[in-house]
Every structure is written in C-alpha cells, then in structure tokens.
Amino acid sequence: MAEVLVYVDHVDGAVRKPTLELLTLARRIGEPVAVALGSGAENTAAALAEHGAVKVLTHDAAEYADYLVVPKVDALQAAYEAVSPAAVLVPSSAEGKEIAARLAVRIGSGIITDATDLEAGDEGPVATQSAFAASFTTKSRIAKGTPVITVKPNSAAVEAAPAAGAVEALAVTFSDKATGTKVTARVPRESTGRPELTEAAIVVSGGRGVNGAENFSVIENLADSLGAAVGASRAAVDAGWYPHTNQVGQTGKSVSPQLYIASGISGAIQHRAGMQTSKTIVAINKDAEAPIFDLVDYGVVGDLFDVVPQLTEEIKSRKG
Image (cartoon, rainbow, N blue to C red; front, side, top):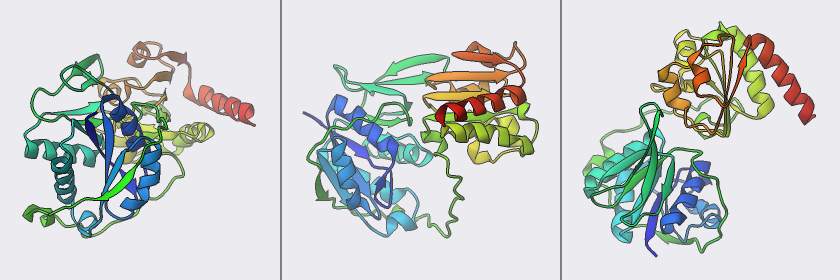
C-alpha cells in the first residue's frame, strides 16, 4: 500500500487535533508516515502511532524555532524524497498552507488547499472543497505530480487505529534560504482557557447586534457554558469590540465546527465564507429578513439580549 506523508503540527511534543484528523484521512488513501519536526518531535510518536502512523520521521534543530517556514519546507522535501509518497497532507493553517505551497513548487506538483474531505480515487486522492463563499461544493484531484493537500480542521472525526509508529531519524540538509528570515522575538498569547478558534468543535460568534465591547460578555458566557470558542464578525472587530484574532470570515479565520452559533450577525457574504462549512448552524437575530437565516439549520428571531442569556441558563441547568 502506498505511503502518505502527514506533516505534524505539535507544541513541544503535544500533537494538535488537526494532525490526528489528517491521520484518519490519510488511512483512506494509504499508510500514514508522519513527519515531526522541532523540539519534542520524538515525543509525538505515541500519539501518532495510536492514530495510525506506521512510521514517524523526526528531526530537531535550532533552525525550526529561529527561522520562519523554510527550514520546515526543507525537512518536508527531504521526507518526500526519502519516502516517495502517494500524497502529502498538511493542516490548513496559515503556516501549513505556506509550507504546502512552497513544497508543491519545489517538487513540481499541484496543490489543493482548504479541503474538507478526502477519498481514494482511481487516478489519485479526490479532495472535497467549498467554493465561492461555500455556495458550491467541488471535488478535485491533482493532475500533475504528487498531490499536496491542506485540510481544514474539523473535517474528519479523530479515530484511533493503533499502528507500529516506528521512529526514524530524518536526514535534513538546510538550504541557503533557510536562514533568510529570522525570528527576533516572541510574545506568548494570553490564554483565555477556551479552545483554539479554528479547532473548536463549537463556536459562538457575535456581530454588530452585540452593540459594544462591554456586551460581548453575553457571547462569552454562552461559549463558556458550552466549552466553545468565541468568534466575531468583521463589523464587531472593525468597531474594536473584539480582537482581530477572533474574526471569522473571508479576511479572518475559516472555521468548520460541529456547531456554529451566530448571534447578532446579519450573514453578509464575507462572514459566510468563513463559517458556512460548519456542520450545524444556529442563528439568533431580531431581523427575520437577515441573510443569515438562508443557510441556518435552526433560526431564532429575537433580541439576542433576551435569547442568549436564557439559552445560557438552560444549558447550565441541564449540565448541573
């Protein structure tokens, strides 16, 4: 069976959920071979093996932390040349898409980004994507070279499938360009205790209808009752009511949770582009004609300041 390279997104050896989802998808088209780089790479082996990695290629060097992107591309190219895989899968983060694009150029292959599903085909892997602000679903395959595919978080359920997970050292020679852009400083992100927005199973977002930064506590309380991440529309972010890092939409982050709750969001095409692939969508808006109601699974016409607190209390009472 052909091998499939899976780029591992981890933090000091703790494997992030999108990588485990990639292993599930990789098993549909071949045998997953994971590539773990940087500090703690060897510590990823147990989790990767538990979820189907037949082999784990590891390499650690200061370059991965000190310089941007290119050292990781060099390493992934080295893994590609060592394995000759049927496909290369990368998490669809900002960094992941840059790594994938650079690799595709180097190896002369086509690339598919932001896939939401993956299946085996007679002529290679077939990827499902959402197009034109998620108004259409397309199925595509790479026609030239080895497919390089980035997959959006929450596109597949994580499934355990114990495999050998044999750890092998990866030989990497860094290119001259690897040290072209140096990281000069890092500022730790202040933790909110909530899930990462793009990885969360549930997202609760607020928009123009929240009517002020001081009112976002209503959205946060609902999110906390559900163990959810908090999102915001562009209008709310541009008004300074919530940080840009929480913006959902075409110029913000794309999310694909199991449940998306939009409160006080009209549903402009820019916002829909970032959340329309959510599995279940609920909208709360006092305007019955708001465009958001055209795509929801459940809609509540009402003032969010009446509806959301009641919903929060009901959830708390059922949990407690």
